[in-house]
Length: 238
Image 1 (cartoon, helix red, strand yellow):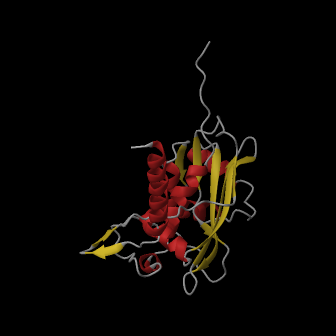
Image 2: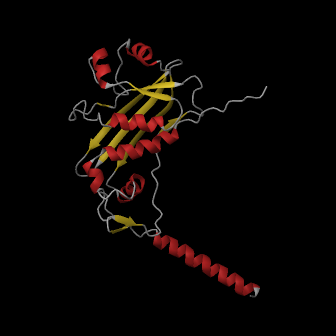
Image 3: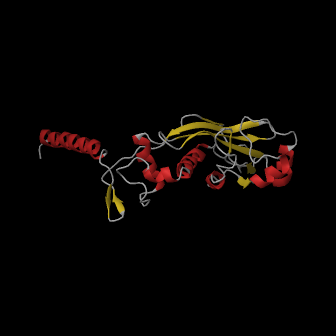
């Protein structure tokens, strides 16, 4: 093959494959006999937008107490988001930054008369000392649902931070709003939650997630904890 002919074939191949990739990325999943056949699709990925993370995980934080998920929404019962508590605990534990231990709603209720505390709510003076005594933690994780619209345009607002107790500083914080009905986001959740979920049909935006909003939080939490500060490398050299 001559050099000009080879160059022509190479350019033609690039044009064809590039165009085909762009065209194929628009193909949806095709349901077939209870599962979905994926047709060369490149799904979008959820990217957190409002994150603060220190350069490194605090070396002195070996254990983190995780408080129950709170909300200040007036039209939602205080324990409505109790199903979110194990979701966040599990996601944080997969980060392997520290040991994450739960402070239960029953414990908070017994200590303070409240089942949860917002990230912005004033804490009782002795609460942190009681948490440290009970868990041995060097930091506390606060989590909150700031907005919740399960009907119409489904939206969930999430806020959280981890506070190192000595010194009093936050190595990680986030505030995110997820518009779950946006078409690209719906496709993203279908991919992230697994193709085997028959409730998430390819032709409806979020059929399965509408049944259980916890699925949104489960996926978002897994992504958010990946933004935690990296652990510091230990130098064993003399």
